[in-house]
Image 1 (tube, one colour):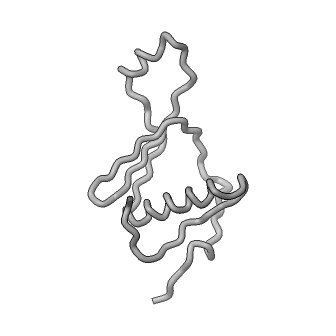
Image 2 (cartoon, one colour; image 1 turned 90 degrees about the vertical axis):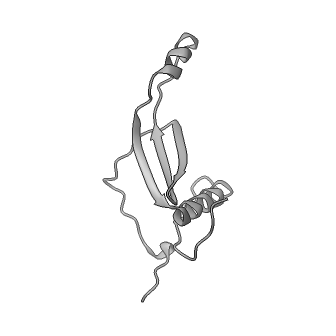
Length: 99
């Protein structure tokens, strides 16, 4: 069986939907990493209590195997340590446990 490296795959994201997120929730469920993203508009000081009691609409959800979640963590760490324009694609490989 042929192996493929994430660096060899070109992504075409011309029509990929984009939504701004300024909040997220991460949880681990049945050996999957679940990431929910949402957006809360800027609030005034008097709106904070109301925001705590209202549900924030999740605009995007990503679910991935734990191994891929670890690759995502590693890639984000790699990108944050590089220049602002650097990209680190996911690289399928051997299992790495989540920290």
